[in-house]
Length: 145
Ligand SMILES: [Ca+2]
Image 1 (cartoon, rainbow, N blue to C red):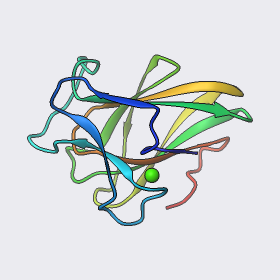
Image 2 (image 1 turned 135 degrees about the vertical axis):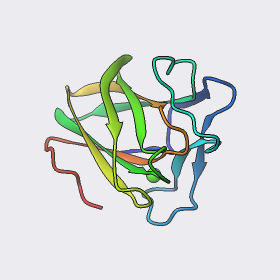
Image 3 (image 1 turned 30 degrees about the horizontal axis):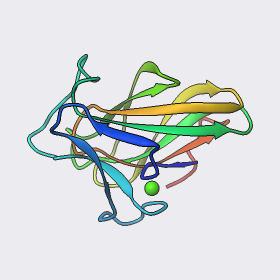
Image 4 (image 1 turned 90 degrees about the vertical axis):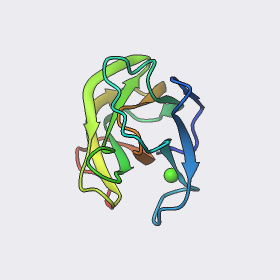
């Protein structure tokens, strides 16, 4: 399990937005979560995702092969409920989107990972999105609320 606030590295890509560690929404896991801020005005990074918004990287080790990543997320509204992601430096074309808004929710992404070291990258798509944690498992069923 990866706590989003325990990133290996993060950076602003546009000198405007960055991932900011917060703890002002109840029921997070670990010590907080990260938010793509500032939250206004609405921004939606598209093909320019490597120069728009912000990036967070996570180096982690898989002990036993897994098939799914479950992202625990929070959207303030319909303009803050998506993310882009990469594994081991490879952009994943399946966008992370979730609902409902204004509560912690899981988005489950299928991605087999072998045992050993890996890198997860989160790119901002819509600003004001929050990420609490990422749970790795061998099932498509998210781990609960
Ligand atoms: Ca967390």
